[in-house]
Image (cartoon, rainbow, N blue to C red; front, top):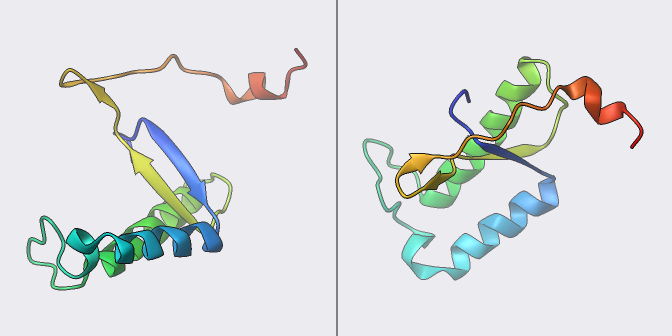
Length: 94
């Protein structure tokens, strides 16, 4: 989680939509592009990973979500970093 640039919370419905999109995209439906030792279908791995990410973040004290997508954003091979925004500032009136 310490490498994620962006976290996108998902509801149960949004995770179902993501899995349905995987089923519609034939190249990802049955076999994972980089399966490694995991024999599960790609959609099963996605579901477990996104649910597990949400559980991990909840255990770390972040708000609870059904699932969470984590992204690492790169540009020209380098990680983009955003300025740190103190969470206390999110409650300030603008």
